[in-house]
Length: 289
Image 1 (cartoon, helix red, strand yellow):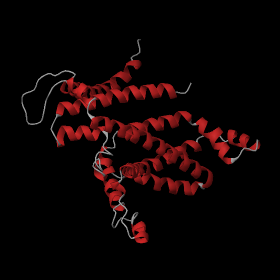
Image 2 (cartoon, rainbow, N blue to C red):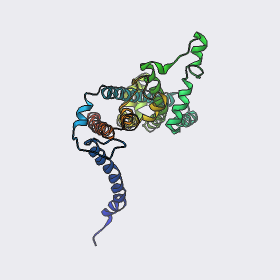
Image 3 (cartoon, rainbow, N blue to C red):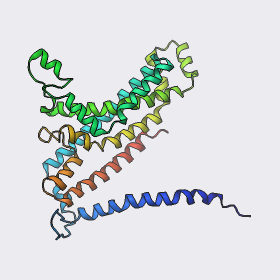
Image 4 (cartoon, rainbow, N blue to C red):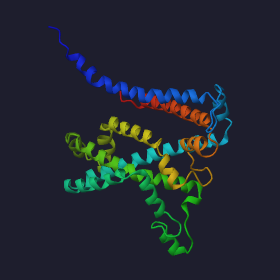
């Protein structure tokens, strides 16, 4: 009698995959179609302009600035988050007792459980130049207010700090749990060879975690592309356009300033294509052999 067992995965997983495919493909195709038109909010007449929106983007200095800010934001938040995660995970694994590891893990998970908008409002108030909890000591000592959001570089660094605080501690807990799963024999062998503590982690533990750490970095790369709400609440892209990322500029052009839906869709399509190509290349480059 012929077995039907191999068909069971398709029966159970197929409908869910079909729904996900429709939810992903339909908006994507619709966005591509809109990007080839000249559609605007409040206007019923539209026409096909094909690739003129894309050509116009590369002569738009504000678009080019938003691309630069997005790249800086991506590199800054991903690298800082992974560095903090590895540092905190290693310190907890080396210095904390099992009981304290549990306590610290619970505390470090709290930031990522907060809604990003709520966290943004809390930290924006903490960085207030006149009565913020963090900036108040500087004002008390010098008598001058410290407005971190008035400087283009400091504004981006301040928002990046909040993003790293929210995700770096959580990733640190993941790194700790990964270290706890490693076999003890390589650590004991390294200590018998008189390796220092930092050498044990740098040359033994972390290389063994290369694959999961790369996966964590990719998760953070995708998450950093979704930082619209955090940046919008804290700086609204300011001062000027110094913290305006690509998704913020697309939102501004599509719904706030001019209602140019097609122009905003062309940015979204370019962002999708560039992200897919970049992530595919980086994944192949960093894929463990």
